[in-house]
Image (tube, rainbow, N blue to C red; front, top):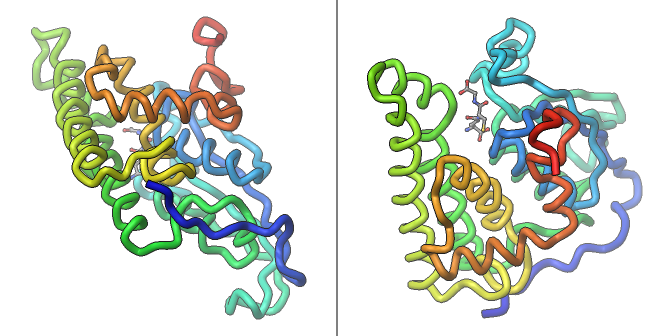
Length: 255
Ligand SMILES: N[C@@H](CCC(=O)N[C@@H](CS)C(=O)NCC(=O)O)C(=O)O
């Protein structure tokens, strides 16, 4: 199925300045990887500030003041607002977006970024499908497999070294079953999850598969999804966003 997508022009509209971006990220965080992939696909430069989740840096007072949910990513946007954005009158503003999906939507909607590669299709039907797939991963899988949940599962099962991994595997596999069923049932997959253009569904899927592989899930079980994953993974922008290729990736995990 081919999906209509807004053709981006090569530059921002006159009078709108492209913001600068700072991404609070952790190399292994799948939610951070969503932003790394999207920024890269949109050719938007950013600086990275590493937050070491295993050392508890997300719990520090400084990070909590930036993100009350005590998680990564946080996308900090520094922009010169204009009347076209209905926000101000040419003043410098800095604001933080501490939820990955809100940040993805911002990158899609900000007037100064409308010229960038579109990650949502034009058609409302195709958008709903993209958001369904995004929701399966971001609402039904990731929150259940998050670090803090795994720590809790471990503490509730002190005699079972495998409990947290088994837990994460179970909910990931259930989510991937649903993801595959949507791809098959709606017949939406083309080269990518929804048609032949990369969308937010692909942006969210890829890091979910990386996370799944770490808990021993074999993605080949979901044929359509695995095919899409393979094709998205080949994109240069996605390779650069890989958890093994980040500035804060420890040497032993690098390619
Ligand atoms: N809904 C949030 C979830 C963020 C989240 O759970 N991030 C994980 C990394 S992927 C995290 O920071 N976990 C730290 C912890 O659980 O302490 C989003 O989409 O940004």
